[in-house]
Amino acid sequence: MKAMEYKSNNNVVYSCKYPVEWCPQYRRPVLTRKVESDLKRILHCVAQERHAGIIKREVMPEHVHLLVEVDPQYGVHRLVKQMKGRSSRMLRVKHKWLKSRIPSLWTNSYLISTVGGAPLKVIKQYLESRKEV
Image (cartoon, rainbow, N blue to C red; front, side, top):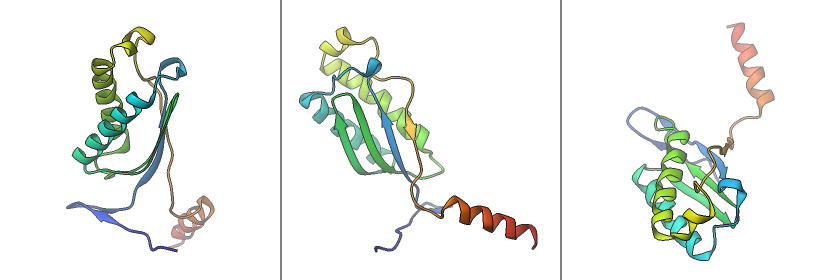
């Protein structure tokens, strides 16, 4: 098994990876091949600008799955907001038919989870043991 790789900024050493998922408004299957390739390029650009990494990316016709690594001081929520905002704006300009299919490209919601680290049981045991110190 590969050792955990860490990144750092001036203040924090981190390894923060998050599975993220969101879908188009009404879960319409509008992420076709041409839209998909433009979306991937936009997501890559946003991640690069924000010093984040896209570890894995899957675009299905009705949803987007990403595994991203982002600086905890910047925040995964800000990265997702940037990705969804810019991609919506740029895709709806380039692919005019999207405007007639749905009023807004993305839903307001998205899913974020965490990856790695110790199991919850181990963390709880550690915190309990700290009470005695």
